[in-house]
Image (cartoon, rainbow, N blue to C red):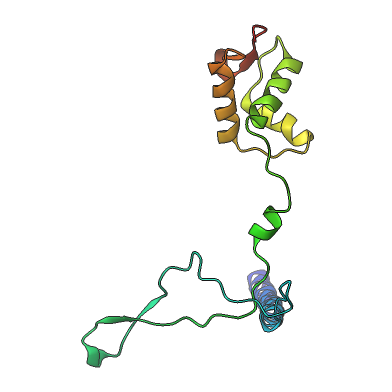
Length: 165
């Protein structure tokens, strides 16, 4: 009796989950259709042209069996409505100066001196300043500081600031 009730409850929950998923999917697809149907205006007021950058040569699809299994290129349907690219937004903000990452990390090492600092702590300190930096970039900047003898690699993965700069 308890197993039957539990099975029925599980089936009921699964049915509700499927209905909710279907409703959410339908709403999302409607939002996508609405976005695609809109035309993204450019500065001159005309509709945006489709961009071919990064698109490759298009998809290939197999022809009917009468062609002996050869493949042909097909043209993909492209929407004329394109949102503004990130490149236009990126060009509005100034590019950081050369060596800015190393200078910021040097300041963090100075503030923590004589204690050693791990790269994760450096990244956290940078994020508190509003700067997001990948670990690879942090490691590169630390290598630059090490090359000019402003920092050295300590024990257990820590980095220390050297006073001789």
